[in-house]
Image 1 (tube, rainbow, N blue to C red):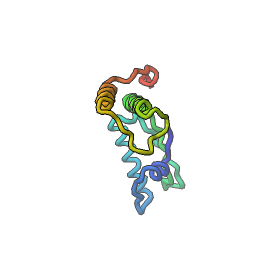
Image 2 (image 1 turned 120 degrees about the vertical axis):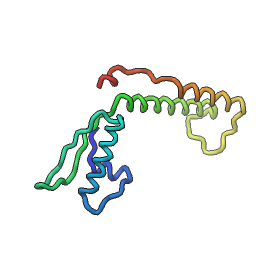
Image 3 (image 1 turned 90 degrees about the horizontal axis):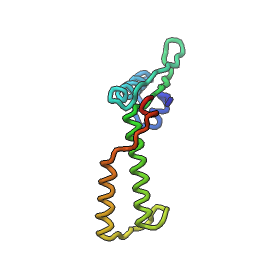
Image 4 (image 1 turned 135 degrees about the horizontal axis):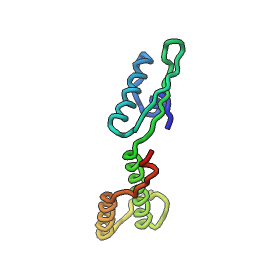
Length: 130
């Protein structure tokens, strides 16, 4: 995945410092922290320079297998939650009003959700190899 420092600043809600180099240093520090925490396997920095001044930085980032597994698990939980809501409401659309649910249905839904959250996601060898 490739992101520029400007995209990260714009989409993250980060504070912009009065000096550009301080802002770029803060973004680089945040990206480096993602590598240190194991969220990214690597992050290569490509500097855009005007003379000796760094005008911008483009980060080429590789997410870790652990992070990708967490994303897959979150997507599976989301899909299961949508399916549970569909079963309760009988409709694919998002409810606009309060949806009455029986106590038995509540207990059953909570039990299924708890079981789903403790299950391991399916392993994808190709994603783990990269």
